[in-house]
Image (tube, rainbow, N blue to C red; front, side):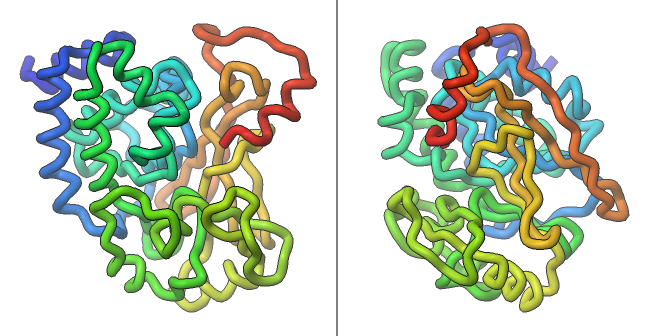
Length: 305
């Protein structure tokens, strides 16, 4: 058994590896991810996964429902850490799978793959608590900087964490973004990781304070210009696991069941066969780490993304 297999065995059990092992893994991942373009182009079949937010045992449940790597090709659309209790285990498992099976796993960047955000929403404190220093957090955030921004499946389906940008009208403009940095507070890269679809005609101000709201006409124009058929994103909690909008041209996939261990939502993954036929597979929270709460907490949960 080589070192990556040993690492996978350790982290798959919910244990966290030694700091020196994390450093070595992240250095290896750095070389793999740095060679990838902003736009990762893949073939179908594949399975698309939305926000996970450090819910490690639900990630394991997702693999049980959707199939294991390398039997299944996966596209993860970001937000691996924060909110939940197991960001270290979650992110390191996915990075280890990327290192072991680089052509079978796509890891996109979400708005929480950020130094500033993780210092507020839990991952920084989690690394400090589990390792007694912030070195592991630093190693992971250096990997964050290299994660691709978008993935295109069979030149037809665009996967991105959040959405579109008024500064981008073509895929070539996405390729031109300098992604190897902290997520900016504004600009095209920020918009891809922060924006949300809304029932408006064009563009609107986002209540998040970053990114934009974008409407059906924006999506239609971008897809037609780039000869695409579907925009697939995450970034927003969906109680039913997924939501289709804009005459089937946009879908939100949410993959963190019982979000924050209190929202009582189901989760989903999107399976695409070789002909790009879609199958939304729903799954519920693993029993580990979850408790039942009152339905009134659903109101609270809608603001936690």
